[in-house]
Image 1 (cartoon, rainbow, N blue to C red):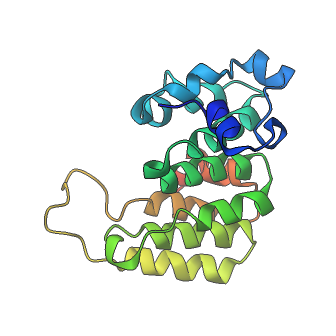
Image 2 (image 1 turned 45 degrees about the horizontal axis):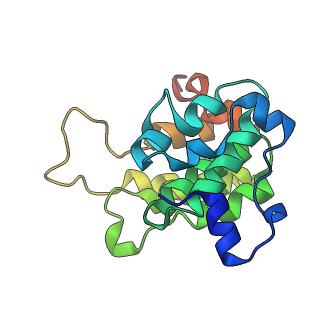
Length: 187
């Protein structure tokens, strides 16, 4: 994989448009080698990539910047990378920056059998402090027919617990509402 910095030089863009490796980023362990990880190691492995960095106090924004840099180098994983960068930015309270990224994570209607777009709509509505749209998106998600081949051990529909947590903790920060305390409350 070509490094992000090589892509910037090849495209003629100035390095100042890249997420800077600021002293904070360096202290967080954000270096160019992380951008060379394969997608699973970068995005899904809890011991590598952005997830490890985002768990370090004070390194959340460096993790979001790392995802942005990786995303610019990995077109095939863009929707999920947009989403994960947006989540970190929302947890930091940067809702205006998170919402457009979340919108870019949407799937085409014929490719959205698991309700991803309803989940995105619900989350954006939460960030916009729009309870009516949030509950409408939750209703769309809850009404999705369960596919025949869906694993019966998994809850249906995906992300309904997250959306229920956003509703339960409406008015709180995304970081709190997305967390397990809001998801696990009883009505």
